[in-house]
Figure 1 (tube, rainbow, N blue to C red):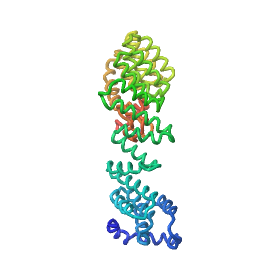
Figure 2 (spheres, rainbow, N blue to C red):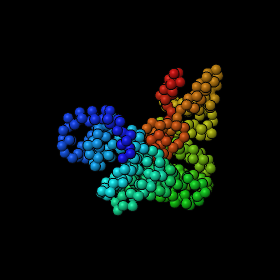
Figure 3 (tube, rainbow, N blue to C red):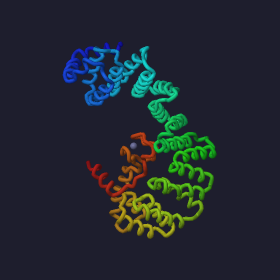
Figure 4 (cartoon, rainbow, N blue to C red):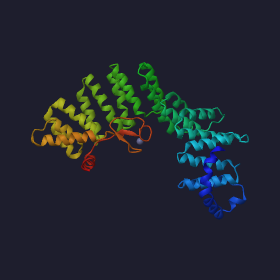
Length: 393
Ligand SMILES: [Zn+2]
């Protein structure tokens, strides 16, 4: 009980005042053993006022230090306040009690593991949660925490093992996650053979048929082996899986169509993509390049100029300037300066979950740590305006 030593002064000063006024309003507390529900409710209520809550519970412990719930709630409050060490000490004291039931012991071990997670001592937390996995019916909480740890440590095989334990009951949630972990395995090690990578991709697809990333990985392997038609077949799946990821596939498509020397087929495909997804700036820019190549610069300028009236974008403007419109030479350097600046400031990728945005693709969002929430964005004139505003500040 050495931790109590640190707390006594606080309790003596203000704690019992709060506690006493609380008891007057809830006299049942003083006359009956305290129910677990009371603590649950109180814990919830007092989340907004952790300091006062701590005082109340310290006082309760002075009245009756046998009640495990009181200790647990107090430790929980400390952890929420960021005082992991105090929470750890309370939980370690509790675990040493000889009279605990198995359920109580497991609960305390989980709490202790969470303390270590908060304190950033991941190996300790891992040890505790692994201990809890040895039970006949392991706690889902322990599995979830291990899943978090292994993602953080990029131990994808272990992450897969944990996610599979939850897969039977949570298919739609765990499937895409397991697929991403297999993809991580496929890209983690550069001296894995193509056939090994292909089998990892197959495993990923088994758990998530709509995994865009597997199509991209597959295409890259085919391209490396000069199997461009096969690569195109893989890439064609992406539009059905999730058309928002198409901009990621376009440069690979360009490589393939160049290699098989079918620019007109690509031109037709880009046009049909744009009829289905008229806002896809990336497809419009690529089509412009193909038109320039096939029909000359003037044709490309005419096409893009007309398109930009209906679908304005910074990147489109930048492309148009680079195509070299000489009609108003004095204006060109000015617009060019602006468009280049905006293009640099603009973010190509953003997370629909937390709003993170950045210049490169992340399969796991650096902001919220969710998988497959970061997607390519189009930079439109509305974005241009807000960027200009922030620039003037
Ligand atoms: Zn995010």
